[in-house]
Image (tube, rainbow, N blue to C red; front, side, top):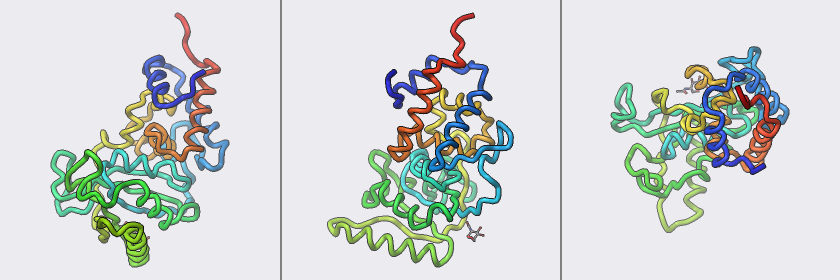
Length: 262
Ligand SMILES: *[C@@H]1O[C@H](CO)[C@@H](O)[C@H](O)[C@H]1NC(C)=O
């Protein structure tokens, strides 16, 4: 059996199509599998399809960053232990109710809901710095323009102090170019249109199928979808990426519940 990487996941998308009728069973299997590894911190929902697949007494905080395309940004943070949910959106500009085609002076951003007992703001900052080029002026790779600029949005003095210290540290790594990242207080975070949420996951119908083809609102709230969105982009930490690969492979190898003939 070939290892399940993005290619074979796409292959499975093709083979399985969108009409496998056992989605709830598949969802149960996947939830069971993922929750078996505590490092994945998947919380089982009360019902098979639940809009909140995390325990509601988890104390959550919110962080917002801009680091290039928000499709990728969601995936950068979604697989981290302690991250419960990511949302793609717009922030940092003055226009009310920005939209993708007219976001004006806003930057593509990601809002991260996290359990601060499991992952700290400081750790999120580390991931922020290591996951993009903060020295490229107004862009990330081929994505050029002010909507891709690098920003840490802060809420309160603790966060702005942590952000400033981490930026200084980042700058000392090399003096040959300037760290362009802005640090500014968060005013409003505007969630992006549904088609931009969990964008990487939506490119893999097979994975959508595995979690039961959730309706859009539930997909956006789902912690499992948040993790699989990172997996689809191959941005989970290698150990977790492999773990999910193996488990999905297992489901496929068992050949159940594949419809073979009619
Ligand atoms: C800022 O943090 C406070 C306390 O954690 C929270 O109640 C508030 O909603 C946050 N504001 C924003 C804009 O996220």
